Length: 515
Image (cartoon, rainbow, N blue to C red; front, side, top):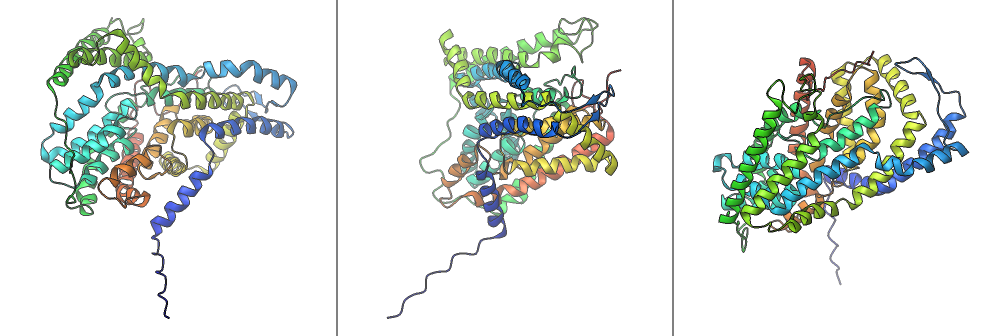
C-alpha cells in the first residue's frame, strides 16, 4: 500500500524569518515594569562595582572631580528608603500626563473626538480621500488610542464605500496614526511626557535645565504635511498594487454611520467654544503686554509656553463639555466627572511603570553613573569626530531598531534619555534636538513592530477582510511606509539641522552651558 508523502512545509520568506527573530526577541524581554525594577536593582549593584575601581571624570562645567556613589551602603539604603515616595511623586512626566489626560478624557468621553474624526473623513472628496485619512491619523495622536480603535476600522469602511479595498484604507490610517506618531499640528499627551523625561536626563548635566512640552512643535508642524504626503504616495503607488479591488464580501452587514443632527449641533458648539478660547489666548499673547506673556513681555519664557499642559487640559474640558451639551451626551456634572475618571482608568499600568521608572532614574542620578557614562561617551565621540548629521542619523537608526523589540515610547525614552541626552549635551547638542531624533526613530518602525501595543488589534481588523492575515501580512503591507517615513523624515531632520532652525519655542539646536 502506497502512502502519500506529507506535504513539505512552505518555505518561509526572508521577511518571515526576520519577523520570527524580532517576535522572539521581543517576547524574551520582561514586561516594561519588570524591566525597570530589574534596572533599578542593577544600578544599585553597578554603583558598588564602580566604586571598587578608581573611576573619575571631571565635571564638564565646574571641573569638579566626579566619582561613582555607592548605594550598597547603610547610607545608600537610607537614601533609597527616604526617597521612594518623593522619587515617584516628583517624577516630572507624572503630573503632566495626568493633568493632560483628564482634559482629553472629557473630549473623548463626550464623543467630540470621534465625531470630529468621522466628519473629517466622511467629508473628504474622493480624490483627496487617502491624504485626508493619513492626515486624520496623524492628528488623532493628540487623543491617545482613539485613532487605533476608531479611525483604522472606519477608514476600511470608507474605502469600501469608495469602491476600493478596505485594507488599503486601514493601512493608510494605520500609517498616519502609528507611523506619524511624532507629527502633528497640535500638542498631545505624549509631548509633556517625553519632555519631562528629557528634562530629568538633562539635569544630570545642568540641574536647572527645563524642557518645554512644546519643545518640538515647529518640527512636528513641518512634519505633518510631509508624512501625510508620503503616506498618500506610498498608499497609491505601492500598497494599492497589492490590494487592487475589494473582496466580494467586503462591507456585508457593515455601514458607515452618518453624522446625526445632535452630533452636528455638538460640533458647532465645540467649534464656538474653540474660537472663544483661541480668542482669549490670542488676547493674552499677541499684545506686547498680554496677560499670558512674561513680566518683560517675553513670549518664549512666558506662562503661555510653561502652561502648555494647562491649555491642553482647558481645551479638552471646555470643548468636550460644549460638544456634550450640544449633542446631549453630557447632561450633568456627573457625566463630566465620569469622562475624567474613565481616562484615569487607562493609566493603571502607566502609574505602576512610572513608579519603577522613577526609582531607576533617581538611582541612576544619585550614583553619578549617568554623568560618568555621558562624559566618557562624549569623549569617545569627540575622538571619533563624527559630524553632527551622521551622528544623529546613527542615533535615529538605533532607536528605530530598539523599537522593534520594545514598543512603549515612554519606556524606551526613560531608559535611553539618561545616557544619550547628557552625552549629546556634552557634545553641544540640546536635549530638545536629541528628543526629536529619538521621536523620529521611535515613530517610523511602530507600524512594523509586533511589540507595538495595538499591533494585535490591527491584525484583527485586517482579518475581517483577509481571514489569513497575520503578522507577516501587516509588516509586508506597512514596510513601504516605514522605509518612506524613515528616509523622508531623516532628510527633513538633516535640512533642519543644517539650516540651524529652532525645533520649537525656546528650543535651540545647540546646548550652551550657563555662564
